[in-house]
View (cartoon, rainbow, N blue to C red):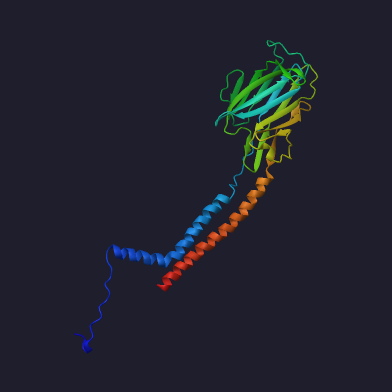
Length: 288
């Protein structure tokens, strides 16, 4: 018996087993809960920051094709249209019209020939000899006779011929995102043999989503809507030089600028939350 008649003080039993593990976990949570909360906040803010940052992907500059037209009759209009028919194949369609009122040449009489040259590095899906010639480094040329047929138009019946070429390409002659767009307008070489050549009009058309939302001030469009855009220029002196038409969507550019600023602010908050979490973790150890 303890001295003075007092009973001895017994130590509290130390928990063991699952109860001890649960108590230790609660203790660690209380010790680091501020740091853990700050880390979770930082993670959420980081995800938001990444989603706000523009991709910043630099668009490649498309390379233009070349067209050569040799004719015995003057040509009034040349139309070049590009369509992406699949993820790996694009179609070049060339339409050639004689001036309104010109007689339609007989189908068995070749008065106009067209040679199409896709950009270097781009090849036709098929290249039948001898009309098509393929050289090393994907340099190809396809020579086709044009067969004219009568076609009704607003200004009367017009002699019109079409030629179709298919090339291997994911995005042939065009690149675009929500801010920038660029298309390649082909080079045209035109020769009128034993006739007065005149000045044909050359029209280029590409299918571009929301084409009308871009500012094409460098080379203004003739027409643009939500699905395609067209450019026209005269073939003066038998030549229309290949060029790039570049467009900018200034509304989306301004939006991306605001998102970039907002993402920078959030990134600063992420850094502050991480630093605070580390400091709180050290303070928790100090208190312990």
